[in-house]
Length: 180
Image (cartoon, rainbow, N blue to C red):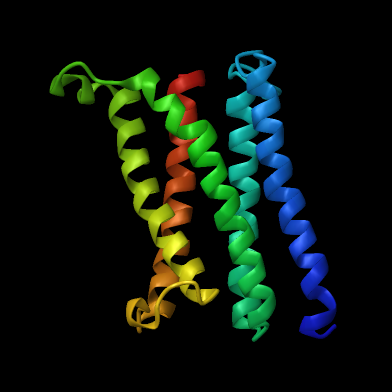
């Protein structure tokens, strides 16, 4: 299928995925369901939804890597843009708010695994999110040419590795918050 034939369906799918996720998160919050029991067991619903979507996001970004390797750059562009936007929604509407639960009162609080690992995960995730947004802006020609990075392929690879590291850190964080 040529790029023009799947462009509109790709955009519609992206809007449904990202917009639907945002609408669901807002609906869950408005109906005070975010703290209800989740479907994995010990965690609240919103944490289980976030974990599930982050795993799906990681699979989608990895699939996008293979799209690029196979030379399907247009599909790669739409795919990666969609997943990065979904990640921004998850970070802004779920993860950022949860940092209030691990606000340290003093530096020694970072020695507690739940607090230290969560903040380390948030720091690594912040760099990955910023890098992903930068790549998407450049890839979609939304940055001025003077801001374009010449070593963007290496940045893409490093960002995908960052997403993997942050995802594994997210699983560890989930464990320390709800299981351990």
